[in-house]
Length: 472
Image (cartoon, rainbow, N blue to C red):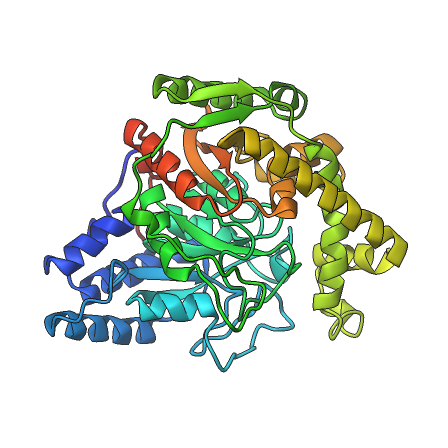
């Protein structure tokens, strides 16, 4: 777990450190971008995290950022910092395939709002990151699967797998992911990075290829909570192109990373004992020991039906996914992989009455979760309920109810109710692969999540550990 220096030695610096180096003139945007592009060329043929490397445009953006800075035109903390984007966010200068073969050559005529906001803030877009087909659970059988940089036999974590791999491997200084049932938090956990799922509506979905629009969330995947704050404050906020985006003003999250109060943390021991494996529960107990040492208060709570909400999530997602793909499914069914095709079939098989019952159950669950969060500040869950699963283990996800529950119970219900959460590196398995803790907060309380995460990362070093990688 020691850091291996490749190329420039900058690869595992945190985003805010790179920002400081660029603004101070000790590092140019071109140098930072070239270092990343060289590293991608060295390592990504084996890791497979990028679908498209946008080297030419990235270098042009870097030259522009350096010229602006020389004129005193600093655009903010992301100025000149190389980032990467999950390939379901539209980019006007590169295709957006969304992990499919059907849309592999789709060239949008505009940037997604989140991409436009990153560029306006001075960020450099290195390229588009690989994801599962349509952002569901499985990669299309005709497309590559990203490789976990810690261990090639370890799962990379569903949809935002490319984002998790690239961020962990030092192939960007941060990335964007999306989360519909856990796809920011699961890859962040599997690859040992920090992932933030904002409140639903906090970040615009304009120009995002959807999986299930009422469940989809866009958020940052970074080396630290501080870095996540810098990206979130850039991409969040109301967007007239997305009428579902929240009107609430966006705090300057990165300026308020000191906790204003001592958090009260809820933990459901019965849920943990029933659904999470021993290594995961040991990590949770270690996290509790750390936070109580900080003076945080931990209360035993009963969560309101997370396993049931996780079971219902698939059908809810399936209905919306069927709508998203109505123009190409079943018309081009043979071009779909089995996982996404199966989800659409589930959605198409439900009646209006079935869907009405699911919506009523979802509304009731959301209300119960909000009631729980009114009594506590944070809810502690694992990032994944089974510690760092292997690829072989995950091959039985669809047919193994206990494994399915361990993976989905800590994540999918939090998308159903739309609450924000953060996933933080919190230890390692005996194999040396990462495990993670997750904290959930009340609606639009990302500031508390980021401050809590930052506070934890001042007293732990898990987020500073990196995989050993050798350039070719």
